[in-house]
Image: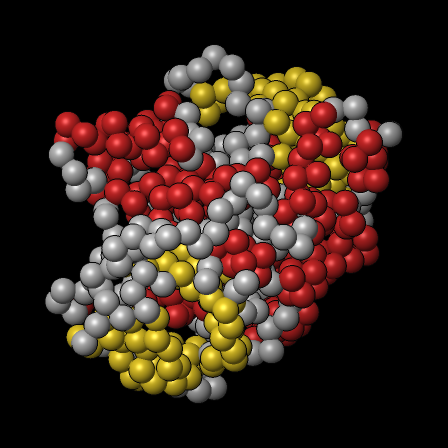
Length: 516
C-alpha cells in the first residue's frame, strides 16, 4: 500500500492508565487502513475497540495516556500525528476530516439545544447558506428512515428514542463529508431493517466519496457480510486481521470461538442449555398488579420548524401486568417502546390516562408521593452515571444495606458480572460501554427494587457478555418476584428472558403473545 493510499496508520501505539496496572489497555504494533476501505473492529467488551476509535480523534478520557503514532492523512500529501498535534490542529481535523458516531448517542448532543440547531451548527462549517443547510438535513433524515424530518429537527435530544438519536448522530457525522468515519456500534439501538438501511447508507457514501469507514461493532454478522476487513481485539491486543471470509478458518482459536458462539446464540432454534428460563417464582412484588389505562404521551413542541403542537408518542394504550411479571416490549425503532418504559418507572408522566400500581393511580410520575421503587437500566448507560464521580462512590450512595456488608455485596455482584476489582475506582468515562452497563445493573439491584425496566440493556454488549448478562439477570432478578419489563428490538433477547411479549407499533398496541 503506497503512502497516498493510506488514510490512517498506527505505529507502536499503546494506551496505559496513568494510575493502576502496568499492562497497556491497548497495544497496536502496526495497523494501516487504506483510503475508501471498510473495516470492522470486533471483540469482547473492554478489548479496546472504543479506545481505538477515540484515539484517532485525540478524545481519550482523562487518566489514560497514549504513546507511539496515530497518523491521519489530510489529503494532498499532508498528514498529522494525532498524539503530537496542537489544539488548533485537532479542532480542524475533527471538523473537516473526521466523523464520529459514538456508542452512547445521548452523550453526543447538548441536552438544552434542539436537534436542528446542533445539526446546522455542524453543517455550517462547510455550508453557510441556511436554506441549503435545511434542505441537506431533510434529505439526510429521509435517507435514514425518518418520515417527519421537521419534527426531528425541532426536538430536544431527550424527546427522541435511543434508535432515533443514533440515526441523528450518524447524520451529524456524515453531513460534513469526512475523510474517515468512525462508527462505534452505529446500529446497536436500531431494529434489523432500519439498522441494515443505515449501514447500507454509510457503506454507499463511503464507496461514493472514497472515505474510510471504521466500524466498531459486536454484530459479527454485519462484520462478515458488510465489511472488507475484520480486526479482532482481545484484552488490548490484535488477535486477527484479515478478510471477513477467512475469520472462521483463522489460526487464532479465540476468533473462531467468538464467531461460533454468535452463531449458536442467534441462529439456534432452541435456547442455550445453560440459560435457564421460567423457573419457580419467589414472593411477588408488593407493587401489585400494574395497569396502563388509556395512557397517551405527547411531547410538546414549539418553534419555527414545528407544524403542530406536539408529537403523540403513545396513543391510548391499555395494558395490564400481573405481579412478578416478566414481559418483553418489542417493536421497530421509534415505535414507542422507550416511552412506555419511562412511564413505568416514573420518568415521564402520561399526558392522557393513568398508570396504576395495585389500586392506586399515578398520573405525575416520580412527582407522585409513594411512587414504587421501579428502577431503569438505560440503553445509554454512561449518561446515567455522574461523570465526575467514581463508580464506587455512586454505588455506595445507593446501597440500602449496612455499611459493614456494602463492600462484600458489591464485590459479590461485580464478580458475578465479570468485573475486575480495580474498575470500581474509575470514572464512568474510563470504562467501556459494556463495563458501565454491567455496573448499571449492579446499581439497580443494590436499591432493592420492586420492579426493573431493562431498556435495550444488552444492545451494546458483545456476544460473550450478552449471554453472561442475560444469565445474570435470570439468576438475580427474574425469579425473585420483581416486576421485569424488557424493552428490545431483538426478539431473541426477549425469548430468553420473558414469559410474554407485547408488540408496539406507531405508539399503539399491535399484539400480545406468550413465549414458548
